[in-house]
Image (cartoon, rainbow, N blue to C red):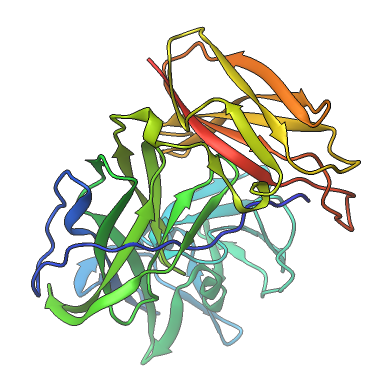
Length: 392
C-alpha cells in the first residue's frame, strides 16, 4: 500500500490567559485565549442481582437486572443504552444477534461489536471474529444477555461487590470554544486546556483527503484549577495555506474535534508555490507564478515548469485537485478529491492546464513520478509541490 502521509502532530503558540480562564479567541493573527479544553467525565452505574433498582451517577434509573449463571454474571445488553454508554443497541432477529455501537467519547479500541446468541465469538463490523472467545450469550425473557466481563472491550470496567454489579467508564470530551477564526498571517498561534491526568493533546493539519500531519505543542502552564478539575495549558503554532485550514485537536484515547483557520491573502505575489522537501532538488515552476491563484469559473489555470534532475523513471507528474468541504460526509471539515490528471515529462519539462467550474477553495498537489523503490508494490511516488486556487 502506497502510504505517503503519516499521522503525526503539529505545534503552535498562543496567548495565555490567567489561571482559570477559558475564553474564546478573537480574530487576528493569533487566537486569543483557549480555543478548547479537554477533560474526562466519569460515570458509574450500579445495579443488584435481585433487581431492586439501579443508579447512574448516584441517581435512580430503571434498568434490567443481571443474571448469575454458572458462577458468572451476565448483563442485558440493552442496559448499555439505558446507561448512555452506547449510542445504539439493535437486535437482528433473523441472525439472532445484537449490534452495539458505543458512544464515541468513550473511545474504545473496538467501538462497534456484534454478539450472537449461542456463539462464543464476538464479531467486528466486517463480520470477522475478534479472536477471543466468551461464554455464549443467551436470551432470557426476550432480552439478550452477555457475560459482564465482555464489556471491557468497550472500555467499561465491570466489578461485583455485595450482590451489586458496578460499571465504570468515562467520556473523553473536547469542548471547543472557538470553531474558527481569521488571520492575514502565514501562521497562527493558539492554546488549549487539557485535564492534567489525560494524555497530552496534539494538533494536526490536513494534508488533503489523504491524511493529517503535525507536531506536538509546548506545555506553558500547569495545575490550573477549574470546574473541579486540574488542567494544563498547551500552546501550538500552525503554518497556514491561503484560504481555510482545518486543524484537528486530538489526543490518544480522547477523540478529536476540528477548528478551522482562514488565512486571507492581500498580495498573492508574496505567496510562493510550496515546494516540499522531496521536490526541492527536482522541480521548479514557471506557472503558476504564485502559490495562491484567484480564478473565475471555467478559467484555464496553467501549470508548467522544469524537472531539475534526470532520472530514467521520470516519465510523468500527477496533479491531484481537492476541494475544501466545510462539512464532509462524517461532518468534519476536510478536502475531497474532485479530479486528477497527468502531465507528461518531455525534455526535462512539463506543461498543461485545467479549469474548475465550481466556486470554492482548492488544494492542488503535484505528485512525483513513481521512482522510489518500494518492496511490496514496486516503485512509488511522493508529493513534490502544492498550491491553492480560489474560484470566485
